[in-house]
Length: 128
Image (cartoon, rainbow, N blue to C red; front, top):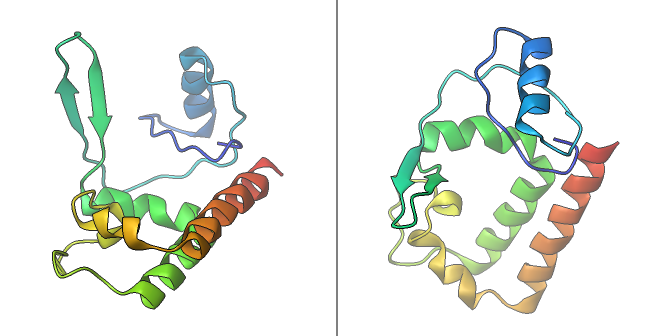
């Protein structure tokens, strides 16, 4: 989406995907539509009766990562500088594993500013 968010819809083509997004009331314009090969998500029923969605499936996250090249580069830079935590499971992507990425709290302000800047740049890039 042109606001930097991603939406995954099941549709036969780009026109159908765009129509579904309009029906959802999505306020942003579509930046691009493409097919993905893998999708898996967890839907949790809350005590309030809401469904919360979490993407934890590494292959699904790998499908979305190329849509954010500036953010990926900024995170890679910060992780190279900081290193990984001893609690990291090296067989799983660190950047998208909430338990493993807790060590980002130890990043200094420079790393946090770098990520903030990358997010702003991604949003600007997608809005054009």
